[in-house]
Length: 500
Image 1 (cartoon, helix red, strand yellow):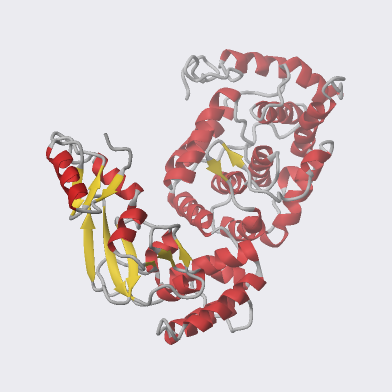
Image 2: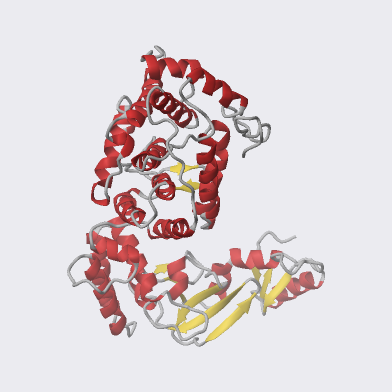
């Protein structure tokens, strides 16, 4: 009957038509003269969002533009992109302020402020405007007088300035500061401009240290921008590893031939889960006899790359210190993937990479996050705890275009070899559990599954003897190590009992 989601009564006849439809249950009146083409079921559960709420939230610009023509989306809403986590829209208006308008699904909060200023953007033909970036930043430095924060405060503005600087550079930040200066008078925000000026100046290095307070801001001022969110996860992991007792598993393959056989299995498993898949016999020929598969030379060299690094006198048992972590990782990556120039071996990524829905660290944050994370690693107990930390550090940053998982596991095992501990094999069947444990930390800030999973697989690795390669491959085959589907198989120990 009605094509539009939101309808306004333009005259008396239209008003009566909409009223009749609402009485018949076809529409819902949300306030005088405004109707939405949705109805909430009478038996709607309390925890289910009403269809009316959804329509209002979807059309808030149109509705509020009708109610408050000339209002400016401002303060926290302008910073956050619209509706705040508290379900509010903050609007500046010169004559209607210090009040709120409740609507289904959201509340419009009116704050005193001028109408559109130079730089403010009209929201299509709704009648609303959106605060310009300099205005929005000044407004968010105003102290919020409500129990619910309607401004982001100094910390939120600093984070935004860091993002602007990293994305657009110094020229853009300087221009923003100049534009904010012009708006300070009409906004009555001279005090707020002084704060903004100090923050921008500190980020650009023109002011003394001490002005910036957020971790990301301090790192930018030092010239090493880092991903503050990831550093938070790394801190959670480090805190957990410091207080969690983890066993020491001594190296079970310290000398040849066991050491070489172990390195071969390490390379085989590490490459297989990344898509470089050979039969165990083909991979053995590549690693142990340099038998390059003629139609897959690059894949063959991937297997050789990890194998050689696992045996290399230096790379096998050394960890780059924080001031050398960047060069150290690049050197390992270059050596491992030197036959793949298309992925720029030995160079950090220039584009953000993804794994499914997981977005890894932006390229601009790679160096700073690696450096800060490497410093944090030194606060974690040596051995298995620190090895787990290093593996997650590289994996969650994903600093290269390809090969990140392999580099992460090599760095993990270097820490273990450095301490005379057993390196870790992550068998194919366990890889899904390993990834799930990493996701628990990446997505839910829970470090417990990762520490538990790595403890278990480290123990599993020590159950085998590596002097006889054929024998250990046979035993691992019986243990389902080479299987891929954990729904159909369980990882067994050497005696055939379920292990993980």
